[in-house]
Amino acid sequence: MNKFLIFRTDRIGDFIFSRMLTESIKLKYPDSKIDFVCSMYNSKYIKNFRDIRNIYILDKYNIPMLIKNLIKINKVNYDYIIILDGKRRSIFYSTLLKSKKKFVILKDFRPYLILKFFFNKYFINSEANSQFNNFTTIINYLNLKVPDKINYYNGYGFKNLKNNLISNFTLLHLDEKWFEGFYHSDYEYMSLNYNNFYQLINTIHRKFKKKIILTSGNIKIDNFDLIIKNRFYKKTKNIYFSNKFKDKLIYFENTSFRDLERIVKNSSSIVCCEGAISHVSNAFNIKTIALINKMSFKTATYWTKHMNNIRLVYRDNINSVCKQINNVKF
Image (cartoon, rainbow, N blue to C red):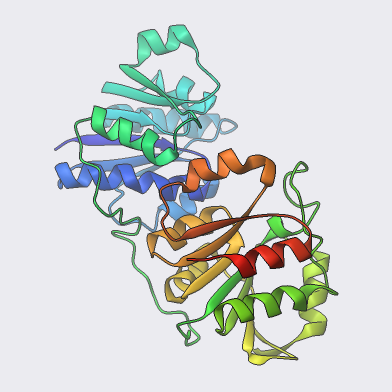
């Protein structure tokens, strides 16, 4: 039985993409053991996948945990250690770990001596290629097979939401990326607010002619709270109906990422900012309009080039965004 230890201490979307590699491993080695080194943040999500045996938390501020996990990992005698996140902490920590072979994907940090003495092979994670092509290079090097269809959610059980969830609707996910001051300072924003909210809703409704389910992120945003407070009324616990559109526009409050995945799975189309949710929608082949930064087009295509059912629109003023959404063709 081949034993793999994979480092993925970054974001949920990055992990979801990593399922491409785990799927390839399982195709060739169905009985293989795949474990992950994670951050405290994404470990809560990764533990939901039944085909991952063990999870080790890498917290550079928790020295006792680092030592405890070091001892546990070295007792396993892994065949492969693969660092996908390219983080300094992951690279340095892995030099203390036992494995027959070690591989790492790098972006900017390239410590020559460490790579020479501690790793069998390193790969450059260049945006000159798509992330899909970068992973394909690694998979081919390991003599694995790229899956014909990547099943991100193999071994991941979906449960029904407590409230009956309709199907055949459009999901509008308004997380912090839509609102200025809550994400990267160099992002372009559309000044979405209480006054122009219905302009966006009307555009999406005309585009898809479906009910709209609205979800949000976990960050408190005053502009968004004002919209919900004055444009919606509470129907049942955590579910709000629109004052104007009634059950044609529904807001689901306090949705976890697992809730969001189940909502995506039941939708027929999605409007969101490019990120983890677009990886989820791609897994289920859902028509997706994703907002991106115009200056970050190269980075956006790096993550989405392999996605057949996604259309990118530039994050701009509200009039421009609505016009772009209206002109999208699938």
